[in-house]
Image (cartoon, rainbow, N blue to C red; front, side):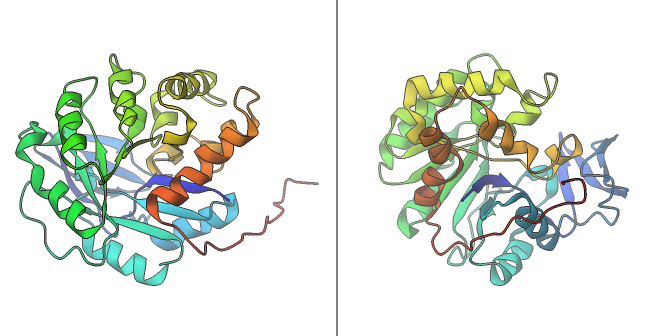
Length: 291
């Protein structure tokens, strides 16, 4: 069993970065604030990052469940994610996007996403509303912090204010940036976990099988333990460089992590944190290059 703690879906990309628009231009490419970037694999020619494509990737890679987070660069996908959850309630957990204004009806969402490093006001103590809503309604918080320790003291205060609120810090603390361990050490609080969405992006210059990423995972575990760490893919942007399966099988294949800790990292911690149950059992499909 495997759970992906950090993936994205969108019906139509209509986002913003640095005050400039982000939108599909075909062939998996997007105008990214004035620069053309390969946003998705080139065969996603219609610009849709659909749940159907993702579920097909999950089935092939034997990923049983996934958490759909959000990003300002994709635009608000709340409406589409509700449709996705209705179709795939057994496979997906979904986040509503916080946009520095009061949140609407959260009853059908599982969590709330904060793109903390992209907030106009980066003082998290001025954004207690989503934390209050999540705490009062049994939701989780998914949060991507600014690089390094710029927001970690604020997060410590919030973790103390809401000791029962489940908080997942994304992008493995922006592991290749200075001060990343300050984000990892937030998981010293019992309610804070770390997920690795984007770790293959951050170590892309090294590329598969990402030995330095494995070392970083072990270093993080030396501070907070493998019980507080979860795998995430950052699908589909990372799929412009690797396959979906490659985003986790470098963990399965390494001999630097024990089998028990691999199970925690790839499945057990996320199952408990996100409340997955009754996930389907998947069957491996032999592909055309396998004997």
